[in-house]
Amino acid sequence: MDTSVPSLAPSRSRASLPVIIGGLITTGLALLGVWAANQSSDDFNIMSWYAYYIIPIGALLIGIVAGSGYGIASWLTGVRISSTLLLTVVVLQILAYFAAQYIEYLQLLSVYGAEGQMSFFEYFDITTRAFAWQSKDGSAGSTLGGWGYLWRCLEIAGFTFGGLIVPLFLKAKPYCSDCQRYMRTRNLILLPAGIVPKKIKKKDFDGRADYERDSESAFVEGIQIFENLKAAAAEGQTSKFNDIISTYAPDKKTIAKLNTRITVILSNCPACYVGLLRAASLTGQGDKISRQDLGSSKVDPGLAREVS
Image 1 (cartoon, one colour):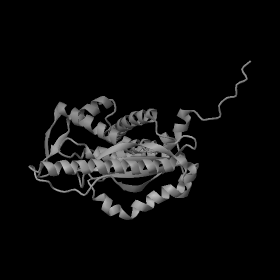
Image 2: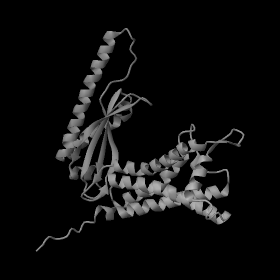
Image 3: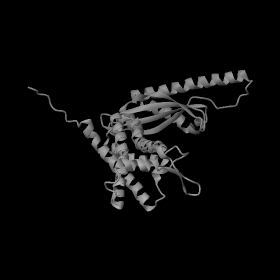
Image 4: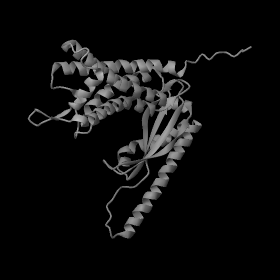
């Protein structure tokens, strides 16, 4: 006789249902908005907006709005975005796109009474081949014919990928599996790991060697500071942890000007305070900053509670 107790935990598919419903709601609202905008003007169709004739910016924006519901529902319910759920979003976005096309087809039948004269596939083929770029004077250019399918695929891809952006953002966030909640994240401190940048002449080989040696030495010192902070966080040494933070926090602007610095991020569960300390080295300035992940380590819940 089987005496095992059935699990009270909800199945993954059942747990994901609120997320899927949330996404379907925003998808419906987004496509309804597109339809309403199209009805207001024959020349206005946000889904046909392209950047550089190849980037489906309109479909991408509508896709982001459509997919926002998956992220909102995931955040509110604590259901984590899984790889399976992402695949489900892809399928639903594609189905939603064709559902919108089918509704337009039904509307055409109701207006022109074309029932029995044109199938949906014929309608889809005609509208796809009728793609045309607008000239500078506002008039329509030549239709693309069979090439229209390329831009139709770009439109579908843009709408689908847009729907994944918010869920992908949440999937990357730290998550507490025990409490089924996303962790709160904040930038904790910027640690020095470099020296003040300076220009060195190409022929000044000694100067360049000194600069590189000083930079490497400063980086080693920065890593050691982070290791001390990490050890204090793991062992729950709140006083030592706070001392390190208070030592470098006032010099944030000065540290930010160094050629290399270490950014430290604290993430913790708002319920049980289980947390992670993550770090990355930042090298360069302005739009030429390179980032290298330095890993993560667990944080003592008691310490996370006090510093949060």
